[in-house]
Image (cartoon, rainbow, N blue to C red; front, side, top):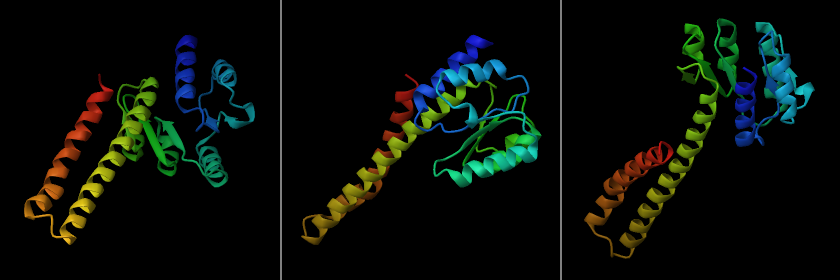
Length: 183
């Protein structure tokens, strides 16, 4: 278990170290987990453990109030449902998780492998880049065709391409973005 947790915490921290401020652990047997987390540079005063449901809610509320960054919460039980709904992004471990946690979460990981969180975050970053590319491309082509239309250069076929053709190219770019990740 220790090598697995060491690998997971290192991967999460290496990919998202500039995002992690607080780490909330809710397991009762966590001393060896805290050992690895402290090695990653997360301060002990930012690690919260053995919280009851109302303690989880109040701790997350104070984190949300005192931070301008987004909060991701990972949980699997009935006690985690209120916090999953409060967090900016709620991730439920769906294989053994309760139905209410799965329904409340924004993302459900069905294999109950914490390493999948890293995969989800990487896919989210790829999707964000693809969305920005598609928006810039679509607006750029449409503005170009509008400017050409003002000067009487653009015809109806250019307008159709700037609408339908650019939409098709955006879909192709999105599917290519997913394909890039899974290679």
